[in-house]
Length: 291
Image 1 (cartoon, one colour):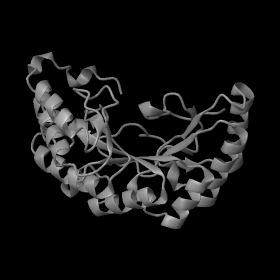
Image 2: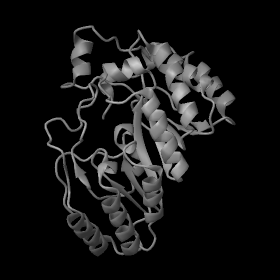
Image 3: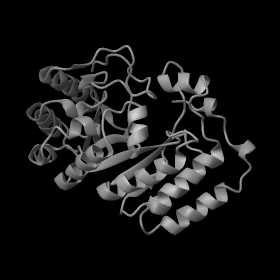
Image 4: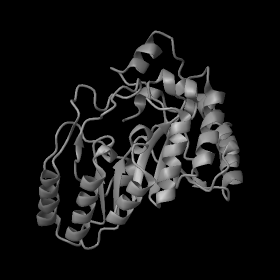
C-alpha cells in the first residue's frame, strides 16, 4: 500500500482500510481548511489503486477487512465507471467487506446523475461523507465553499434517493459570533430538506495557515464562546425536522450531543440545557484541540 501526502479520514473510519484514490483536494479553497494546502490534486490510476487493494489482501487476508475508506478529499470526483470498478474489485478481494466510503462534497456529487449514484451503490459504495459545513448562503460564500445551499440540498437528496448512506457535517461556530443564529437556522432548513442518514458535529477551530485564522487574528471573525456554540447547537437541534442520527464524534466539540431524531430530540435539548449550566471557564480553550 502506498500513501502520498497527508492522509485524513473521519473518526468513524478509524477501523477502515485506507486506500488512497485521489491526492489532495480538487477544490482546496475553503478558508477554514489547511488539510491539503500546497498539494497538487491528481487522481490515481485504477490499476494502481487495485494494486494497493491486492497488497492489503496480502497483508490482512481476505476476511479481516470489514470497511474501506478512500481518501483524499472528494474521491467521488472519479469517473463513475472507474469508481465502480474499484468498489467491485474490493468486494471481490475482501470476502467480509461490509462498507465502502468516500469523501464527496456537494460541488462534486452534483455532477453525478441519480443513475450514476445508483450504479455506484450497486457496485458497493455504501456511504458518502459530505462536508456541508453550513446551510447559510452568506457563510458559504464567505468561506469559499464553492456551492450554494440549494446545490447542497440537491446533491444530498440525490445521494439519499440512490440508497447510499449520507453523513452531512455541520461546523458549529463557522458563522462566528455575529452570524450564529442564521447559521443554525439555515443549516436546519437544509438538513431537514435532505434528511441525511447522519449529521455529524464539528466545532470550528481556527487553524494557523488558513484565511479564517488570519481573519480571527485580525479580529474580522469572532470565535464564539463555549456557551454561544452550545446555544447554536441547541437552536439547530430544536429546528431540525428529519429522521437523521446526530453524532458529536470529534474532540473539537464542547459537549457530546448524540441521538436519533425525532425520538431523542427532547433528551438532547435537555442535555444542552444542562451543558449551558456549566461555567464557561471549565470548557477547553480552542487551541487545545488536536485536529
